[in-house]
Image (tube, rainbow, N blue to C red; front, side, top):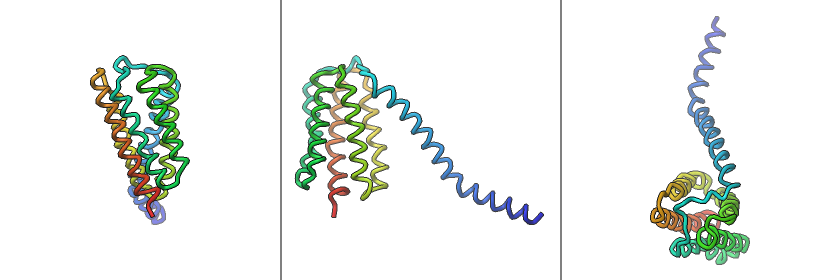
Length: 179
């Protein structure tokens, strides 16, 4: 009987201590399922929205995505330079020159690959901050994606590019290239 009480008490303590961790794992798994379902839908469809249109401000803001290339070049990181230039070109094609075409799909694939690449080079030096950065990253992206009018999309998508132009070099400067 005392063994049963000891086991019961130990199980209760272990359960209470692990409950927040178990809940977080459960929530993260569900979030991952939702994200993967969304990616499956968005990565294979052009998904042209009526408010997306050729806009010179949005097109100009695509070139802000070159900011990581500048910092990477000064640190002799030619891989990041080339990849940043490629991301910029795909973004300009999808967001300005060829809106609502296969370039939207290409842009999404390239953006996901670049995000994973940037995550992989920033996380070793700034692991917690890199993970926490997903919150504003997904927030700004969602804000842009929730546009309903041309004016909203113009402002929000330009803001999305501005966020990236500041965010990516910060992780390179204070993470990847920091000594």
